[in-house]
Image (cartoon, rainbow, N blue to C red; front, side):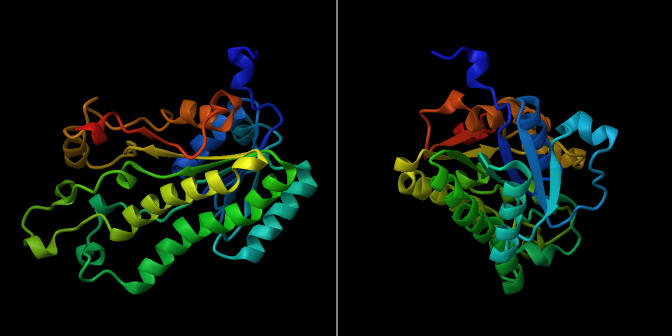
Length: 276
């Protein structure tokens, strides 16, 4: 029987994290590095990333790297996989974290978000990144894991995969009802779709040693306007939004042998919001 320390140990394991240089992607990378793993931060934007700097090594370890990848393009993902295999010889974990997520509480072009006016091009772009991108990464990187008979896929969903957006959160004074900003339809659709993808792959690869789970985090405090923060806090039994590092323990749990008997599951961590 493994000790509790051994169960959460990710030493030497290589974790590909899409959207890796984003707000939560960096937190996932820190969690992997903190458990001894090697995070590979994958993103289409690498501006400001200083690999090998003191700050980089402190946060992610000297073996970590960032790789420019367009996850909407199969060829780009195949090149990513080839580079990871050349550099590390293996890939153990895939965290599908990338998504388009406009901050509606600050937007001025409120018509953009409303269903009646939502642009088809934006629908296609959001699904391409958040859902098609996750599918392609699973198809290409997950297949490599299945070939090796071991691996973990973690899809980062949202509390809005299990509950509907409460559009009252985004209301602005002085606007007619038909002009009020709303959380775009694509965000909930993408995150709900990731739960379906999780269940499908968990059963599809059940006999290959590849486990597939999802996490549904709630809102994370990131300098949002105080009025918005208070509105959301009123909907959460714990009375606050999450801190940026409060999902790290769950990431390590779901990526490690501590969750070895979990597959096809969705771990909801939302301060209790979805139980109200």
